[in-house]
Image 1 (tube, rainbow, N blue to C red):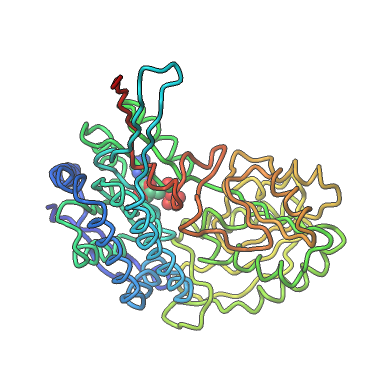
Image 2: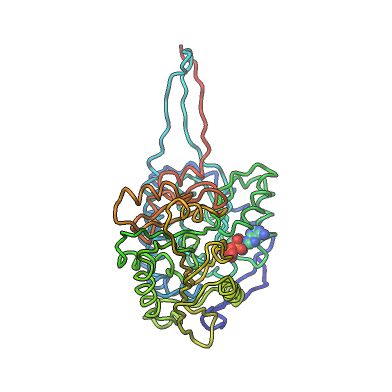
Length: 461
Ligand code: ADP
């Protein structure tokens, strides 16, 4: 193991939390040795036994909720409330996939022309490389580890450089739950391109599951193409949040607060653009602005705080630049909160009078900024809402369910929250269309991403 380390910093203070071993290509390859060696027995471990280990992972995560939430809040910066919600969500993947692990289905059928029977089954794809981002250090890891292990795969995981501590804590917890040595191998590194390319070049790695930006996803899909590696991609988003003239505005404000400000807006499902019907825009802006102004912003060390810093100085500069450009495009600041002097905080901000062509509406903001656009014509609003390469999440608030469903059906998104500001659920198939990704995580579909389908054509006449 490498002796070089890198610093993990607290984004609320800029101070060092811990030094972590900086994984090299050699460490990456050793992790694949371990995963490949463990695969032989893990793949044939009875599903019930794998399920029970996964269930213990769930129990232990629930037991350690406070400690894990504190760790997430410290290295990621999100509020303790958000971090606790993340631990609950993350743990649910273990419970869900412990239940799915034992539901392995195949089929048995007659070939239509007669003469043969077809037996279809699903087998684990092999060693899976998992690459996760910093915005949900626990949930993005468990959303991949749990289905992989349920399917019988072993894994090598590269957490984001900003937040490796949660992944390392999870690895210890999995070991305590009885996950055998070599089944889960975590390699933190500052050299993601070298480590991940080493994995994609290694013929023992048969799967990559990536969550992160569309740009990096594109690079990894190109690399995966060299050996036709099975790839699942959860990429960027640009979620529209639509409010119709007869929506319940108090409900819409409550939903908007969650959809926009959970994790400080640093979620790929975060509401990125608000399309509010002209008839209700004044009421919405007034109530939403009041709610935004009331947000408690500060470090997670104060458990009352609701919004923490963004992940880095660079991220903060990027958000500030987007807001500057929006103002140059004609937007007006309705509300902008205040922030502590130290740490990488960006104030929660509401922008109004945002022109429909403003640059900010085409970018994933990844911060606590809410641009609001007014609409009157539904067809034109839908055209603007769909005018993006992304298609991950969308939200609709409407008084009549048939209006909500009509609009939802026409929004290009893999997931639509209808009169709800939160859509993530381990029992539902999370994923995007267009350039937001390929594949689904969670639900029944989630386990399939880690399996190959095989069939036996049998003549037993
Ligand atoms: P974000 O903008 O959310 O940080 P990224 O796509 O940059 O998203 O990062 C997501 C994950 O991908 C992180 O674990 C990061 O280290 C990793 N990553 C970034 N660039 C590369 C690359 N060129 N090759 C492999 N992994 C990468």
